[in-house]
Image (cartoon, rainbow, N blue to C red; front, top):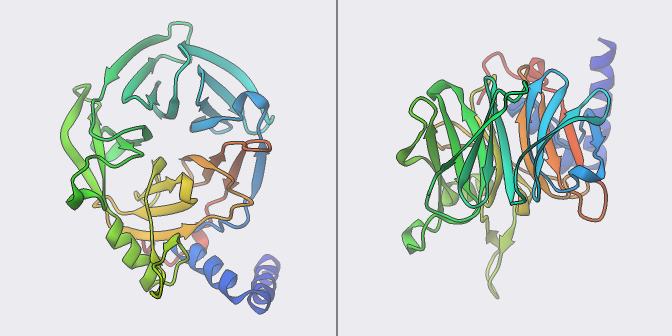
Length: 308
């Protein structure tokens, strides 16, 4: 009761000082269970992870992290706030994301290669690579779709140059049973629908304007990371350059959208969840230290039936 009273007092004062921030905070708590303006913990990363580009949980206190330039997995202990192990797996390259599936780590390279690291916890590491050859350029988004036993892979740039497809972002699938790419896209994200959602819900997003005309949303959706929520089963997507967090159902319908604070999220490049729903978002260090932000999942604040 005391904690609830304090929370009510804090939110009431926030409303008096900044009604828009108050409404955004309440909306986030009711829709997704996170207050993205107030991480529960901020981890300042060492120089080796200044270019952190992806991460995945390997146990209750450890995240496996990669960075843009080196073929090394860095195991970061959240309790000790330090790197506790390093595992080299490849040459220098543009490594963008990483995900855990059972006892195997998968690393995505920007040139559309998927690297498989089997038995990474042992001394018998086995490395293999798969050429995904998906349409689009600069593959950055990777996550595990447990329900369908597949990996989801997304390019940061548009998938083709056809004018009619410029507002669509496609997500592709790697079948873990066959070890092969699934033919064609498995999901499509419609930017026009996202922009309509932003307007209908009065959500601040990047805008464009023409002289004498009203500003309109201008979302590019350059996917830098994505992950599936372990409780709701929804797809969380980061558009890093725009500092947008988007939540979709698995049919590609937009469910939530928020523009992230530039002071907390200098360059959001990675997202992952723990089994209990806690969310971690990593930021590359531009002119300061890189960070991992920890957001506890406040499921008790959600309605009885989660709206997502």
